Length: 151
Image 1 (cartoon, rainbow, N blue to C red):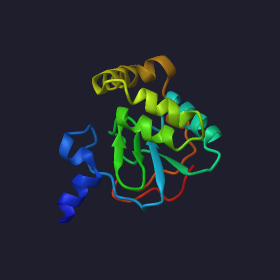
Image 2: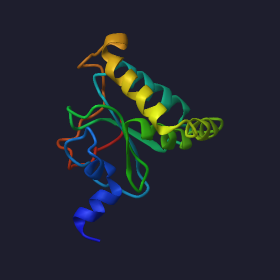
Image 3: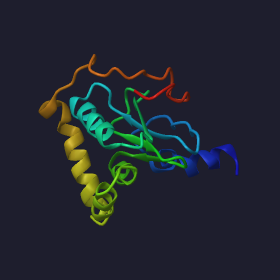
């Protein structure tokens, strides 16, 4: 497989016209990364919620290295999931009952989850606020360089 084809296989944003202008790097097969909107108060609260439930400490967190990226990205060890499609694989990494909840939510038609995600994403700063100094997570130097460590 060529590098370009490999990038498309592991990064659907390259082929699908994702809101991410640059492809995210492929990380290690055993690493699981959640990249989020660092200044977003809702996103930081969600990361705190996930950290409290991630008893096995399998998830790593970092603010998204691309400030123009709009939403969450999740690397599961094989590929990137973006925005509304990231919720279900993230829930699978948590203890019971969250994998079950994720499989129930995955049965909602994609147009419904995508529309709900975009609606919340469009209003997250208005409803919950934005704080550029909120996150204590290290920001990678570029979108082609993986995060150095989890926050």
